[in-house]
Figure 1 (tube, rainbow, N blue to C red):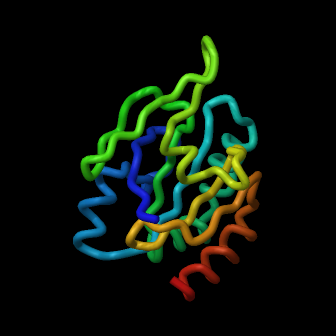
Figure 2 (figure 1 turned 120 degrees about the vertical axis):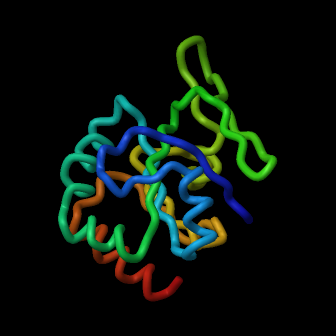
Length: 149
């Protein structure tokens, strides 16, 4: 299953990309992708942003072996990539989710926050991980995945 991309401005770290940047970079150098699926109201998402993703060893792994993108699961803009459009889908009067967040993050029909979705350079899902992830655990996962992708 080929997976396409989205845009988010959530993560504050310097190496976070938009999916538009990712497309260009993949043409220059193919790398696996880590997608951080979050919401603005999720305290565990914010905690990961301020601890896990600020860890120097995590940053080193992400800078060298991966591209990474943050995807706001409640972004309300349409995203058109490769001729395919993903959009916000309301689930109630003041609620909804972005279609791309569901495509990348659903596990057994449920979308939990935060979710990390690991993609190969062809944007195929190779692994998904939910819940708060400490820096040490993320580094261990990145090591394993970088050696198997």
